Length: 121
Image (cartoon, rainbow, N blue to C red):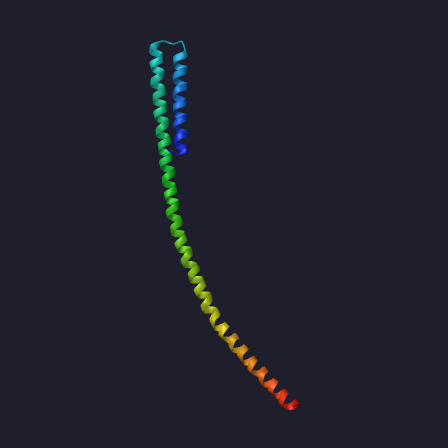
């Protein structure tokens, strides 16, 4: 039994016991006592139905939230993958151009170094 169920059961049992003790300790007629007991029973049944409906609604809302979250995560995941793919597609030509420029600079630096060595030597 979960903590919530234990607390709920304790609350209901305590309420019933308190109500019964209050009814039995009050100096009233048997007819009036029975009427109060019926009224108490009806109020408790009504309250328990309301609790049940509220808990069912709460559970349904959590289920809906869970479902919507899964859908959103799938969409976001696909969007992120698409963004990374697009970024890579856009940056690949720039990277190739940079590598080519670096290679050309290296070759030019090597030629200049050779020219300096050959003219100084």
